[in-house]
Amino acid sequence: FFEMFGWPSAGSGVPDTFQRQYKVFSGAFVDKAHLDEGGKIILPNSAMDELAHLNIVWPMMFKLIAPSVATHCGVLEFSAEEGHIYIPYWMMEHLRVKPGTIISVKNASLPKGKFVKLRPQTKNFIEDISNPRPVLEAKLRNFSCLTQGDTIMINYNDVNYCIDIMEVRSSKGTEEAVCIVDTDVEVDFDRPADMPVSPTRPPQGQSSLVEPSSAPLTFSNAHLNRNKKKKEEEDKKQEDEEPKFKAFSGAGRTMSGKPNSLSSSSSSPSTSPLGKGSPLGSQSPPSGPTSGSPGSKGEDAGFKAFTGKARSLK
Image (spheres, rainbow, N blue to C red):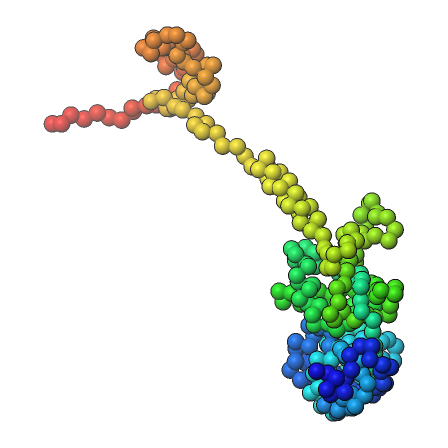
């Protein structure tokens, strides 16, 4: 299909060179906020006309060259105003340019990627996303290439996560940038930048968060098990701190208003007022002073039962 328009596929010869200078703006200037969710840019229509007459390898990728730094990208569409290009906002931050800054755009031929090492800038990425594999697979479809040293941004559930590109490799070894279109890429996650280093460091050359794997886009869910165990310990500690419920723990009183000496002893089976093996009616009187004993005068001093005046029905 692309060869019909003079765009040969990879390996069809030495590609021609396309290099132009444009004023750079973010997608917000043309109401294309979705541009920030990937690594592709919008070029003017005149660029497509010129590229159609050149020997350009597909998929088309470009190198953006700013005064102090450079990066690589793909192309989303050719609808920008003449003399302008629109790029993701995170790419403007990486290039350290302001709207209207003139940068150079040059076509690039990048090798197929085989290995990518990523590092989230915050640990929220592995705490908020329970299964990063399908999320990353979907978000990386918006990228044509990855450049070592870049900090890309992906959006998930209206939250932006910044991810550092620590290392990229092709079948020949470490590269400046690699193409990730139509290829299987092994992805390894390094420990988030704000996560403390583990006391037991992994062997040299291995990821501090997950073990290297030959399967593409392999991630670790070890943090989920740690969070679950921590939550169980907190719930158990909270249950131990809660006061225990004791039924019928109130104090009893007699008809005269005095504290019942049997109320404290009745809660324990070993001090039941009923003697062991005795009949129900053979309850022995409680020990201690009674209302008629001398020792009860001090107790009755503050309480007088049935002190009202009686009247007849006449």
